[in-house]
Length: 304
Ligand code: 13P
Ligand code: SF4
Image (cartoon, rainbow, N blue to C red; front, side):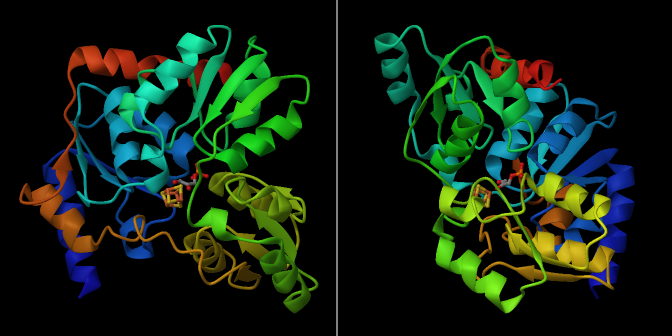
């Protein structure tokens, strides 16, 4: 049954000259029909280079917006119209503009998990994979980092010489992990290495053997000859790794590491979006795209 729908999707995808981009947190049956699966940085780079007429995005709203900003000539459709990242809207552009007016010597660095409206008032964007490189390569010493206080703390710890102001936002999924959760997982699996996402709180990160983006965590496993891992990020990463390495063991750090928004996209959403009877087309004026693209392009330039 799933195979039937997947086959229809693959056929329609060709007919519509469409490229499917999927974040690694979406369900496995969707990653199987995607042209590219990755973390936020990898997906941004892929969106910039798509050579098809249409991009169908399987993930959350800000990711499809980013794809449109990077590929303005393409038709960009979000497969699940209501899938949004709660962190993306935790602050308003007005709050940021007020801060900028009061602190003209500060650069605003925003996590890519923000709305396009926030990107319009951001100086430089970062993803979890690019944050250290980008902030390290910035000339500015005074930085306001929004919205994720945990990713911001991780960056701040790596650059004590910079003056980084943090606002109190974050991911409700990673943010609820505690050091007790990390300790419990480690005592249950004493031979496992703990790999965590920097959206987890600092007291969790300090117990980790490795801190990195979803792509970084997968690469760490690719490059290390270890047999057991506790995975401190959305449950799909432990699942994808266990399919890739069936002889190794991957334990999610906590059963609550499930993002409901990332799990919202279904195969039927993908199918209907390709048929033209579902999905949400991302539309923005040229002027808006120009304004929002500055901080993303600066990230791509600074991530050297
Ligand atoms: P990355 O995939 O860039 O690591 O981000 C994780 C995330 O929470 C995306 O919403
Ligand atoms: Fe947003 Fe967290 Fe879900 Fe990622 S995992 S989309 S940051 S709520």
